[in-house]
Image (cartoon, rainbow, N blue to C red; front, top):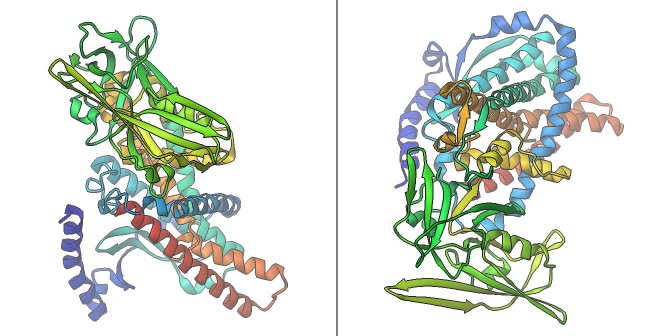
Length: 541
């Protein structure tokens, strides 16, 4: 049984009797500040309410903040819905491909593989506190009493809460209500921007260490290796800087150069690399030079095949090497040799939807002095569309290595929008950046910090990572709360927006308008929650 599932079962066994006790004996539970809230338990306190009272006195200031909060919430609403719709469209390609694991659904620092224990606890506590403080301060600025604050608990901690007085809240006008509901989203966004700005400032004291080849060129560095790939079996660790390669029957290493294109990268020697040859690899670690003892094939390795894609129809399989692709377009026929992932990307960039593509794969093996090269020609398939270009449906790497350079890694850590040219590019770049922790990037993995020199030593990395996690959890909390579904803040904001639209179209009766807006927003909320659950399950399981 998966460890995460086992932990969830144990936590549920502990939680259910507590919930039953709170449900059956509410008066006794209230003495311990425990209140049943649907399938969850509210742990009520008075923490922070006095601070909310003091800060809420600056009403004009918070009125301006309220306007900005609604504006920010609208932007994040569209970002969240774009992400959700794109993920939903991609669901057919994810079915059967395996998820990242249910443990990623648990927001428990140290247990969730993405959330480090110390940084995660500090940043998560900060994000939840400022979010609820935002709601509370806006409540007081609009003369609404805050009855309690606390923690929402259901098997695992689900988040903090701020509880405005419901009767007073319902009597407020729509503007005041929406200021209150949008406050948490805006405050999280504000602190995410502050933390990211501090992180940028800290990066000015980080420079690339001198592990070059003497010509000013940076060495390609390994920051990810696909499990089960030839790269994984080679013994080269993530964090290695590749200094050279030599062919199986040679004695000296040739220096390597980093190449990239179309979002893919690789490394080659002055004379290139040949997917029909086996190589030994020389690499640099913090403790000095090392070399592999087993030769591997260096070429464009297929790491993934998208379901329902042309590549799947052609019978292509992961962990096989591309040798060439022959394209046919009308009477034109041309063949492209594929030595690196960059070659593959460039070949596909020249293709069009409807082109026929016949892929040849190659396997190289050595037995004593005999080298065997086996090629397989796969069935020709018609390319589908990826924008205006042809789409085959392959993910490729160099033998399982994902490589970069220290400068590229540093630049991407502080500027997720490098190379963006359209609004969609910026949106997708933001979500790719936020997905960094899945690959151990926060924003730079601990294993590769030795690639750099820092002005303050290790304390620089402590501060950088703390600011990153404050940024990451705050912006994630802000975006997720913009979801137009109850009980997220976006659900209440969406109901307010529907109410406003109904008023604009001529429905003046408040009760009728409220009834209609509740029905419309409730229906849409249920649909959005189903969409969200489907996407979440597809990525986790």
